[in-house]
Image (cartoon, rainbow, N blue to C red; front, side, top):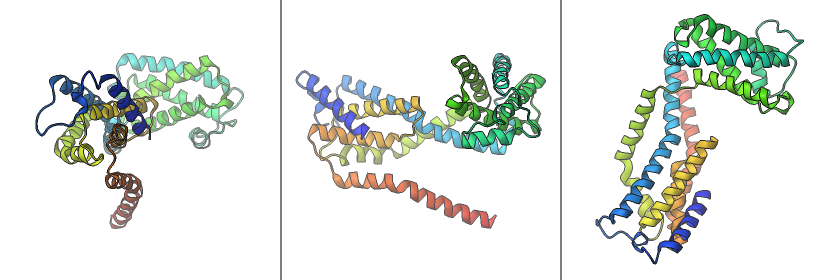
Length: 326
């Protein structure tokens, strides 16, 4: 709905301002005749914006899956960011000591007997602070800091220690994320800033994507678009509205898609480029008075609705079969 309304509003504004001065962008393309150079330049710019933000959004899925595979199959190489510069490792130690001081002060008067991880895991799961939360978290932070200091670099961590250290870092990072939002934590602004810096150091050590993975996913997305572009272009350009898409409609829908996806990236919201772009095209058709081909709209909407349950059923069946076969 947001993409529909924003694209419709943008086309209305552009049409009001430009129609009399430059009617060419608002006319349907004539056969294979290319558009004027300035229209082509605008379309290249808007297409590039959509492509960039599409990659920044949809590319995360591919990178995430590859990293899960790498961490699961070769954890000694990819569970920790072994390429972390020495300067950041030193900053990690400084941030760790500062965070440890804050957390230990909050947990003063309590001691941890045994494994501190269950208490921290319980807080992450239930978001409820108890007498064991701060002291257990303090022990974990201190242990992580001691290990980094002992080895001097993430690249020097022994293979048998990598998995446990990564799990501890991830657990502490998640606990801090909830703790800084928790009103019951009674953290002041300076303490929150200190913990946030330490969380950034933890994330830099665990939540990283090697450059070659980014390049591989970008190439995969590009090749997929090169191979499957025609069906998408025909559907979007000719089958959503009752008239052929104009240059202005395409540019407005692309600007809407790029802006929406960029905002979603900034706020960490899950959106679909296809949803926003096709909704934007529909919005421009409505604003232009062209009318919509409801059979296409219905098919697109049904595909959106059925994707989740269909994927759940298929993956569930496959998992059941493979778990019994192997």
